[in-house]
Length: 362
Image (cartoon, rainbow, N blue to C red; front, side, top):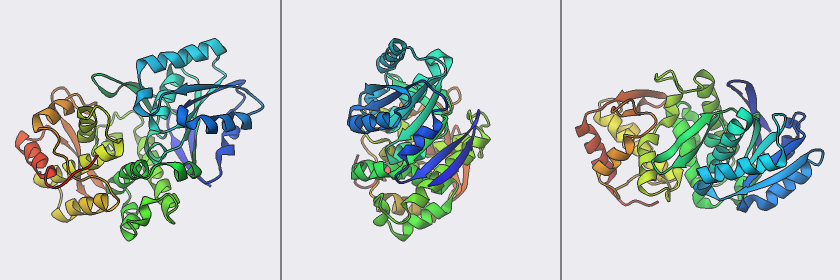
């Protein structure tokens, strides 16, 4: 088991390994009640987790799967369950599920009694390397993804890789997009390892899977530790974690959240790689490296299902925009992200045109 320290409002640990679910019991810290928030698909695992916490009273709060959980109605349902169970500030929430579950449960914890502790147990690759670490929580609205939320750090994150064995192949591949993102913005070793065996990298049983997952978490831990609330606005701040996300979130919105987040981020990274090159920031070889690695593990690298105008409108409400100005995290070289603010429309249109060349898939 590997432990990665995150420094935020408080210091907490992210544990990565196999057969480590029992670690949860070491982080309930005197709670008298525990609520396990989980989707229906995690019902059996939630029951087993509750049984392992036999020394505390526990309840189960079952929520919808995936993004359907991240609504105001589900949030209110969770509040009601906590109220009826008499949860106090000494008590604890445990999230058990993918990134949507950790986003929701974290927001529930942040808002119940103005904040109670939460332990995240992410069960998907995407949740382990992204959603569960760093304290971002939230729900979606009709106006966009994650526009309502809070920064609220967990007490601990337990990443038991056994859960990844039952994750669908396509969902696991989607999670690899965030791992690869970390490679491009900060840790080239991730890219080198994946390039050495792109077929093997598509499986959680791959020899190097624990290392690349831990490295991706370490990248996020390091960045978050320096800029928890995304206030720096510099090329070293938390905003760099959004590489590929401005365009990716626009794709998700246009597709009514039917696209996997990782797939949308993959085409988002290709878009900003093209944009970076067109802006004179990035060489062609690194753009091609994006295409080779992302497509090599089965991620999409093209998108032509929407006009530039539709995508531009969707990007304008992105959380990283400043007034009417679009902001993009671009790349100058591997490990050297930069901020490109209010790029010329001609560059955006040209990057969109390059992104539409070739076949695509969701």
